[in-house]
Image (tube, rainbow, N blue to C red):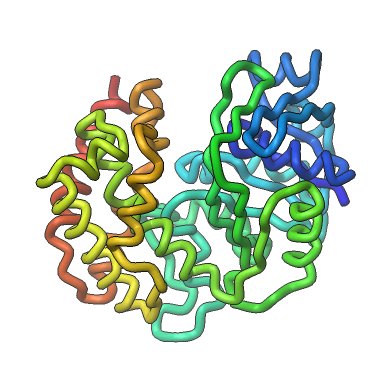
Length: 324
């Protein structure tokens, strides 16, 4: 098996390290000091499960890699539309794109029977730019339940979680999913193949849709938000509205709001990925997290006044960042 990791940052490099440890031919596509460190000294993973070091192939040029069996996309969702030229050299006839992203994926309605089959979500796939760059028939969804960070160039700190749930948009249990999952498990990671990954998407989104924008607007950690009475009530309202949208699409995730809040509290003084991006001056990955759900509320008729309000001010913040 040949796997390319496009966007070998904190999550991508961690996955690549695990797959390499399983004997997979891994090619990390990275850049800058991180790439140079990996090429010179390998990739180190520091983890409560045990530290280890691997020496995978690494480059900034996908043409040096050529076609692979799977491309693991470690990119932010707001980088997908521009990824086509980087992805194209990695493709052969059956190459799979493992789309590990937060929020609502661009393939959400692909192969999903019902009134919205193959409906395009504009805030996720504007004018079809993402689906042209990353063809939906190649896509396999991936919901990440791991927390990692780049501690130094070539050094990944694994904080918690090893689960990477994957699934086909059409709800089948495919050979390509099983093969990729087996390799992940051999590398020490959890990779359940879900019959309907959309349940996992909404469970994770319950937290992201509230904590990510609120943390960016307030600069607060997840624990601080949970401990603040009014902010906690705001989170509950946002999660409640999110579940109403999910229900309107026929999805009923088995996760209570209190349980989701408890999980967030256990994360402690963790900065969300959106807050980390804000502090680095990067564009915020909020279109797929909150704007998409507001768009889906319009599709289903759900009333989401709290989500609309937070989405508006978060979008304004993002505009200020991109204009700076």
